[in-house]
Length: 90
Image (cartoon, rainbow, N blue to C red):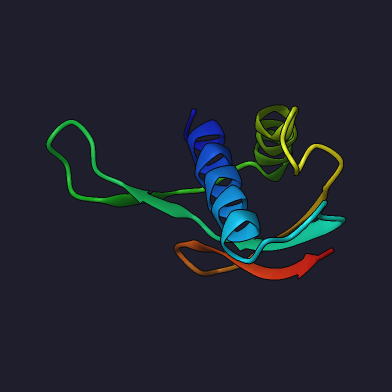
């Protein structure tokens, strides 16, 4: 579930970037994705490893019918605890 929420967040950020920078179709988006820290059931935050294939599926599903529908998502796992967009090819 966290994979899908992250994919939604990434697509929303990419749509904002394409609008703000007045970009056309995006060929590819390169991402670095680490673990995500979660707090649940009253316990302190703990890192959860994300599944790259689940994230890719989420990205492609959410991006359908948008300017990102034909974009290739290149995902690199990192040791970071967050995610970031490292390259956008138009």
